[in-house]
Length: 283
Ligand SMILES: [Zn+2]
Ligand SMILES: [Zn+2]
Image (cartoon, rainbow, N blue to C red; front, side, top):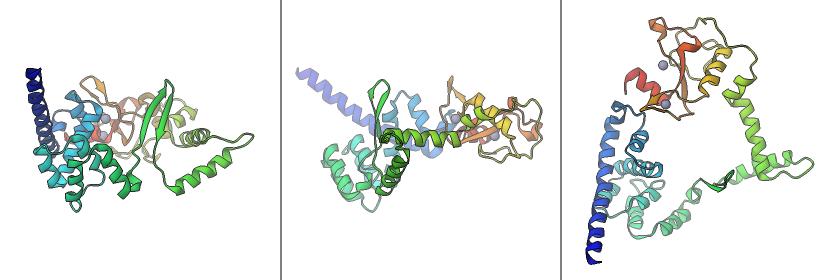
């Protein structure tokens, strides 16, 4: 048992050392935007490609970035006096003005005690937004909201309660339906009756036009066709995997207008901001 224990001690030491070394390397790659050179749009995507789980990659990056702002955190991480998990717990409240106090707590308290301390001082930060599976199709959603928002929800609940009283879930369902039917580009595209345009549309050069761009750049039927085909998701492929980004999207001309490219369905594609920038500027 003694040898096993010695092994465990040695491996634990290497493990913690690797963690703090990895933070340093990620900081440097982040500073140089080196992940773009390697074909990744974000440090997160890059860290995932190293085989790190989503939560580990995310925590490492949040902590690495915070440590550059807060020197004491960097020192304590390098001295392996603070765990990654405790460092992650205080990142939302930590700044250079309060660093002594919070880092001291993070070095001595358990994660649970630390969360309690944060809740005491920053009640608005105390409930992290979480979702957790309860059954195959049921998810528990936990979040803190303001009293003002609760009042608005209750108001909508009143309006939704017709024959029977609406539950909070039914209220949220109605809100989601109403929002999506109004704002989801895919829903709009499905509703539009006009056929997919065949003809070329003349446009003003609007190479970086955002999705919410004006009709004069992308005629609505063309925009709808792009949305239906790409499903309002970035189409960039890195290492055989399509980018999953569904936010901050642009419509991009594969062959630029300046090189005679045209505003046709075939020449248009959906890109997220990161990949769009990568394609145009290579960084
Ligand atoms: Zn573009
Ligand atoms: Zn993308």
